[in-house]
Length: 144
Image (cartoon, rainbow, N blue to C red):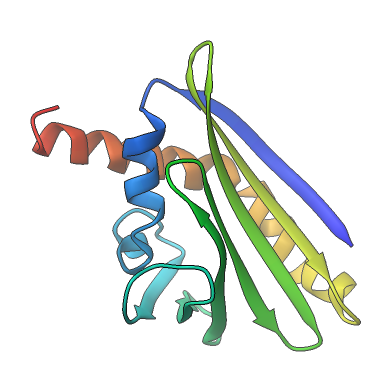
C-alpha cells in the first residue's frame, strides 16, 4: 500500500470545515478539479456516489467513514485498485489542523499512484486552501 499526506493549520473551526467537506455534492463549489458529483440521500458510511474529475472518467466512490466534526474517509473504486482519501480535522494550537491523506492499494496500485495519487498530493496545498477559503466565505455569509 502506498500512503502520503499533506497537513496544514487554519483558524477556521473543525465544525465549519466539516460542513464543507461533508457536503459531497457541493465539492464542485471549491474544488476546480471536479466537474460534477452525483450523490443521493444522507451522507453516511456506505453511501455510494459518482464523481467526474475534469478530463477523466466517472469514478464510483463510497463513503467509508464519517465522524462529525473530525473525519471523512471515502474510497474510489478504481480498476484493479482502490484509493482511500481521508480528511481529518482536529484542534491544535493554531486553531484546526487539517490532514489530507491518500492511500492506494491493489494489483494496479502502482499505476494509480503514478496517475492519480502523486498528483493529488502535489495539488493538496491548493485544494485544501480552496476548501478553507470556501469555508470562510460560508462563515461570512452566515454572519459568523
